[in-house]
Length: 489
Ligand SMILES: [Zn+2]
Image (cartoon, rainbow, N blue to C red):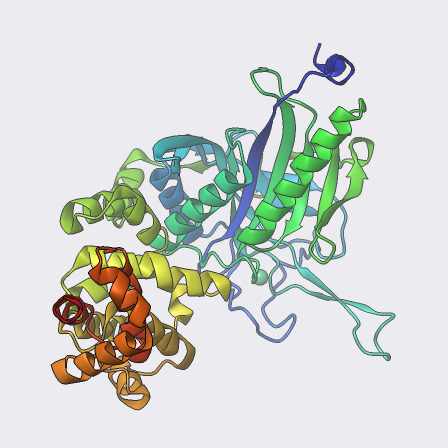
């Protein structure tokens, strides 16, 4: 019936079904199966050994810290930690993979059946975590960039064997925005746990997406495609939006969606077919005979559980309780640990939590979003923001001028006191000066004065605006109101 919707002229509403696979790099000092350093940005191939370059006769030994970090994530996402898990070989050939296989987990992952909560139109929504497993990263290919080297490709094995966790969500996500919310929440958890930097551009947090569409109300899933190569939250959302539209158009045309892997092309803003189902790899997984199964004792899991820090959801509840701010504000302010730290630091200096939240949720986050910056790159410090808010409270500047002060602080990183002094933005509290501005406004608009006196009281707002214009927005609004009422009588 669904396929004939177009001929019958019925409107079919489609619903996207999205599942995400995230690879997160664990911030251990050494690699997952050898003692090589994981420091980023070192000279190529200086952090390698026989194990991570796959030399015959070398044997991997699992890094206990990496397992501990993966367990932390499992617990923080309410997963069941498997008492028994197994490393497996995922076989494929690629120049950045010296062994010819990647050590991963397959049938027996480390953690299963958890969830992450996101906010969906004011309601909590659970996104299932199907599994979390550990694996090693591959190396990095670099293709010649100068005329002399352009016919060469180079491989850097420094990244080979860096520990990763793969987090596989259930097909519970219903929109690109929800995908973004889920990713931000997951990244927040990793950062709170201090086990991953969560930097998408540097590749320490990578995301692939499975996406399909189906007529709303239908149970069965449609044919899905897999999206790769999205290196920012914004790109994930954009790629999903594009792909959902593309799939709906295919169905509306009476054709079908082809199961395939597609690459997101950032420059063109489209997804491009990379390989079809028939070209999909057969990885021929089998248990790695060089590694013993991981047997994780309940006691160790409990120790790790006790060591967990305050996580985003707990912090959110505390913010609502302690600072009396709306859940919506708290959700956003706790989404990243540095953001929550910025908030608490500012509130410590300026004790009006809701006002601080308003400025952060509004002006501050808007500027950061526009510049695609994170809070730790924000030119306005908590000290500066708190000082500016005190200046409003003390009447030194008006709330209106504060908007300009904030912009200037953001642009220059300067202290608010200096900006206000240099720009002459101090609020006018001088009665004489305001009266002068009022008189000027009245002289310039005799007809309006007349109308007002004849009972057209709405004109009052017009005069407030005129006085503010005359004083470049610096007049204290309360005084302007009081004095205007007297003068206009
Ligand atoms: Zn090594």
